[in-house]
Image (cartoon, rainbow, N blue to C red):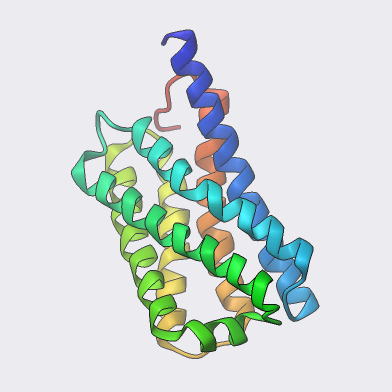
Length: 189
């Protein structure tokens, strides 16, 4: 592996730890304080802005084995997070107090992007599992989080369960990031 390729892999690995880690912390902060805060929303925005680039990077390090469904999944997931970054700015500008208020204002457009995230996540997670370039547990944990978020989108549950689904998705991504930082070329553990 060339030094430039290794540097890009380290950058992707660091982003796969940083963005999902920040996202999880902002979800927990929002749940604990029962609403949004300006610092929490700015941190959330930072995490969301990184996500599209992160998914293109995670696709790129698997490009030889992940296939077209992995690319489509990465692009859909990334596109959803472009919109979610916008919603974070909207919440800041409009001083939206909490997630329920944000969702009630954005409604079907927000839901449509949630569906894109779920679909993209399912495609990307399944393709990553099949590709075998990362330990399979990372894709399984990511997919479990996606499945929980899908189920919770269908049934009404307390917000902590949604946080749990997001935390699982993020844990799978963080696992992929750790692998990229520790190994020159990812492969199953």
